[in-house]
Structure formats: structure tokens, C-alpha cells
Length: 338
Image (cartoon, rainbow, N blue to C red; front, side, top):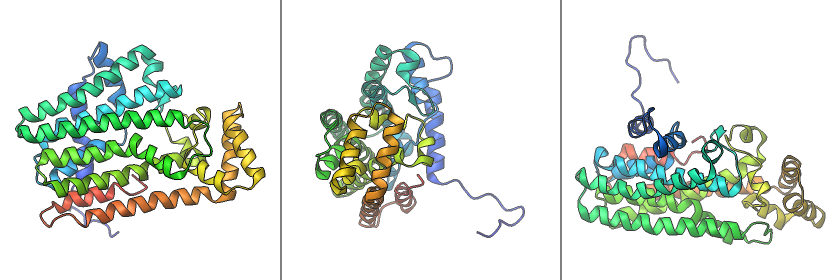
């Protein structure tokens, strides 16, 4: 890239950067440093934030269809709260003591406090829609968005329940796994797009198209997340225990692919590592070896890339009236670097 001429103004920040800064400022306003009690737990959980993928989807989807940023901002904050609330509960279920590079909420404040804080964040997700109504979003849009969120909330719980039932099941089909991943992860990303488009005034076909984009993006992200523990470099930067899947006997996508492809000896080694090995780090090493021998990691990466491609293709079908800058911002969210 050529150097910027001396004295020229800096490049304007991308919508993603602007929105991330806006969201972080809004979190700080809602949960200030002097917070106590439940609000103190929420501040610890929400600040500093993670990737902010879900609220960014709400904002970009809303502005893609011509919505107003200020009117939909509460919904973006609310969906990040719902996501974080689910992580609070996940960490208790999985007995993970770290999240985002520091003590998990249940480790810092206690399991009971984490459960209550997570519940409150779920309810805040719905309260956020009422706030959008007070800021001028028409009541019929708020009502439709409420239905999207309620349906998504139930689906997410079903996905989490199904994941618990799948523990230790190496015979699980890839299709069944993807269905679980869709419910557990992709549903919330699809809901983010649908809620944003609905509140922003998008028509039904456009809203559905953006929802499908979120669905493919969610499956892509779940697969990429599945691969991380088996990438030694990426695992060190995860901010949470890389052995969580192994400790919880969770057969993620690359493991299922490897089990299907492996010869009997490697299959037995894989089964022992996931189900019987008592040292998680040793189990990770042994599983990683089988994944590499069978090409399972490459296949998983290819599946993630395919869902990202399908997500981007959907954006090309948006109507000509769509805001180009925000369509581009949505496309950028499919990149692995994000």
C-alpha cells in the first residue's frame, strides 16, 4: 500500500471500528466503574468485550435496510448481554475457570451469582426491545423482533441440551453435529441479523436473506472454534482453557471427521484419548496427531470456508437499495482474521 502523503488526513475508521467503539462506550455508560451488586458482576462479564460479533450484526443489518443507529443500539447491547449470559452458564457447565484471559465469572464471584447474573442478562435482552420502542422504533417491528428473540432463545437451549447428550458419542454423524451447532451458535447470529433488519424496517425477503447469512456465518464460526484447540499457536491465544472439549468428552467436528476416516488402530487411540485419558494435555496431543494423519483439520477448515462463501454469496442477492458500506462490513465479518 502506498504511503499516505505528508499532512493528509488519516483514513476514516471503518464502520466496524466505529461501532465497536460505540458499543464499548455504551457498555461503560450502562455499567460504570462504581457499579455494585449485580451490576458489578455484569460489568466484569461485559467489559472488556469480546469480538462483539452479534451486536455488530444487529447494527449492520439494521443500517443495511435503512434503519437508524441510535434507535437500534439498545438491541445490539441486549444481544451481547444474552451471548455473555450464555457464556456464564457454559463456564459453570463445562467447569471452565477462565474466560477471555482472566477468571470466569463463577470463579470470581461464585457459581450462584454467575447463574443469577446470566439470567438477568437474558431478560435484559428482551427489555432492550422495549427501549428501542421508546426511541422511536414502531411497535409492530418491536413485536416481530420479540418473536424472533423468543424463538431463538428456546432453540439455543435445545442446542445446549443436545450438546450435553452428545458427550462421548464418537459415532455421531456430521449432519447431527452441524444441526446441534446451528442451534447452539448459528441461531443467535441469525437472530442478530433478523432483529436488526426487522427493527430497521427491512421487508420480509431481505430480513430472511440476512437471517440466512447469519446462519451460515454462525456455522462457520463454530467450526473455526472447534479447530482452535488443535492449533498450538491459536490455542495459546484463546483466552479460555484449550482442553475444555477434551475434559468434557465433547466430540467436535474435526474429531468426528477423523474418527470416520481413521484406521482401527488410530480410531482406538482417538477413542481412548477422548473418553479415557485422564491428562487433558496428553489427550490433546494424541487427538491432534490423529487429526493430522487423517486430514480432518483441513476438511474442517474447508467446511468453514464453504459456509463463509455461502454467507457472502447471499449478500450479493440483497436489493439495490441496501446500504453498500454496511453490506461490505457484513462481508468482512466472514473472514478468518475476524
